[in-house]
Image 1 (tube, rainbow, N blue to C red):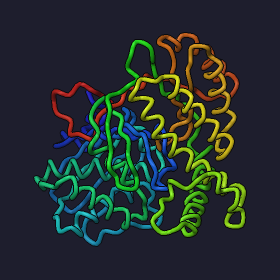
Image 2: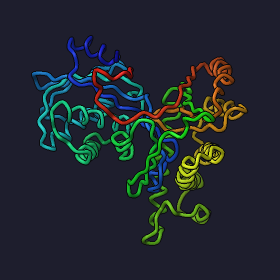
Image 3: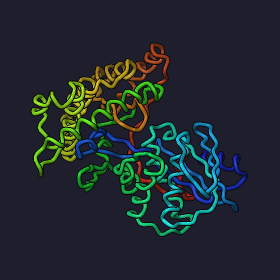
Image 4: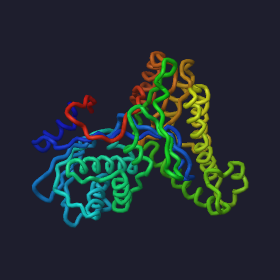
Length: 390
């Protein structure tokens, strides 16, 4: 039984006409790669959104976000996003983009559940756009192509002042179950591979530190804004025909007049991370566990030394994980929510790690949770015979 079905029935007194599963987007490596048109290693996970939708006989859209216990309502005529709309602007923007595309929409009752409801605005925007476009395409027989949906999702950004990433949207639309995807963010070409972590020698978990979103969020956004500005400044100094992602990190020491020391460290991380992605992809293709683990450890060192985006809780858990002789490597990853760590180790390492989670809760008063890493597929309509619940 899907919880979103129960919430929809209780809220609106009827069955939804369509239910959509929008998995969570996860960037294993390459979260800063957009700033240099580099590379990103991505997949999806079960911690996403569920949308339940039914049509109304009027011009009203009602939205019940059960996860954050918030209800919103708006009219389809004269629809605009307002500065104080917050999360509902991600929903409004999709409706506005479809209307501007000449598509007539009925009033609707909508229910939302899932962890992505707590995520940062950009991640939520991509999830909402992908979910609603798939749902409306099915419900209203719109016959939208993938390119149509990507175009409309991009247009929605302008109406909500959001910035959902094209790579997040592409991942949600194109990835299959148990796949990882490598994006070239200059051309948006991509490769996929079957999950390389599902073997007799390797087990992989996602560790959620359980920290509030705002502990790292503002710090992360500030670093990202400075990084984007710095990379754009560096690009202006390059010769025509050269690519920013190929910029030598050795040259950064000679650019002190262009940016602050902190900004140059962020630029160093961005360029180095993009390079790590391609090396990690090759390591995974050749089942080179040691090389991939080395890259993951280097990534965490870069987060600590260059970005300095961390917290005592995150540092404690990563240190405890890497001290475990049965763990190969661990590092922060990007999921639109702060404090998620990828841990790669021997099968059964979890048994030697559970006592550390209890100690963590005693020290920091936050509850950390571990769940097995298993890449899911893309956004999809849920049918009666689907067995995955949320």
